[in-house]
Length: 588
Image 1 (cartoon, rainbow, N blue to C red):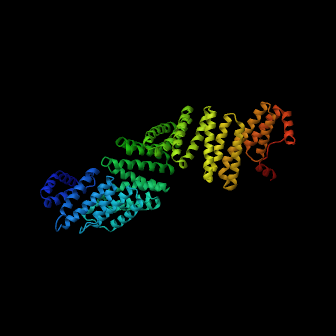
Image 2: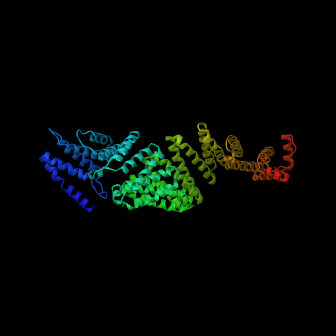
């Protein structure tokens, strides 16, 4: 290996000599220059760091020119045609790496159509591989899929000679095929190809593996992510452990621009899978490692590293929240919010919604720590970010805006801002009603929840009548939903609604009695008694008993008279409903 590197260095140092000779005598110096340039473009030692794309483009373009000049005139030699085809193949690859997609496709096509050139199967497969990768980078995935299939088939039948080894492998072709399938949303097929590729890599000898040192960690990392996307978390953890070994074995200093993003992605995916499989402490440890790697990457290259740092911080904050480490979660979310704020300036479509979510989560942390003012500020910033995102994409972010507004309503209530709470609650409800018009099954079940949030704000603002209307509408909607679907899904929401309704009626009846509004007190008592008749909830019955006891103690004659005047029925002497379960026990 050392000898290979030394030979490469010698060839690069001596390039000026064949260049000069080619200028003096193209027929003599041209083949030497072409061969030297191709040697520089296809090092035989994988541990040698490849040249930058710009230099590879320059070298391969120079090789193409050198071989083209040899085909001018009569009776060009076949080996010169072969050299031009090989130079064009390498030129296409270099152009693809440089992002010059159309030029790369043209060079790839020409390399396969040089008249009289002998193109080995491995070289033809390499050209097809370049086409597939270039089409993928250009976003032409359907065309890339066909090229990737042809590429895999070509490599399966290729028996590479020694000089063809740098022209790619079946493992690399399978990885590209899997990537294209994943990009087209065919996740199960993509994972199946990744698994075939991983199996192929595991069966290779140590010497063979040296030729795919960059392919193996990529395949294992991407397979881990694919398994996670399919919900196969246990398998993802197993493959992820193998991927960690592969990324650790390959020194990051050789290819930091490749290995550091791979490690950041792997550690983030692995942490989330460890969480799902029940190993939360390990998930936290892994996500902390992901943050550390992403910070290192961001310091080297902010454009590549900062997006991965966002992913890692989101992952870490999630696990810290699950572990109830509120202080540490707040610090992670603060860093995440600052980072997303900066990135939103250049890419609001991606980072503004993530900023909004980070701020909403940060508000919960402040709330848990008793920092109510900071919680409100973070909540207001979250709503502002979601509002901006919803202006660009209403269908995607209006539901999140409604949720953030509901959360902000609670925070306003807790800090003595009733008018702001009512305004936020009304907007959250209005958005949810509008969404339910177009997607009833998804958003109508959320309407009772938004009604309860608004009702609480109205109570804080002193509007008990408005709060009662919200609770009653929430009960009506929940009972309708329970008739049409599985009632167990809504039982908890109904119980919460009825409890809040009973409490509001009880406190309202007492307030009316205190203010000598006996008729209004009787109206509240009648509603409370009717509520008691339609539920077995103990707390509702207790509220009813308490309200009637207070009425008897505070204004018995006035309440009895008003009751009879309004209902034409005698004032009830017993208001507690015996639960059905108790009746059954007494009968037995």
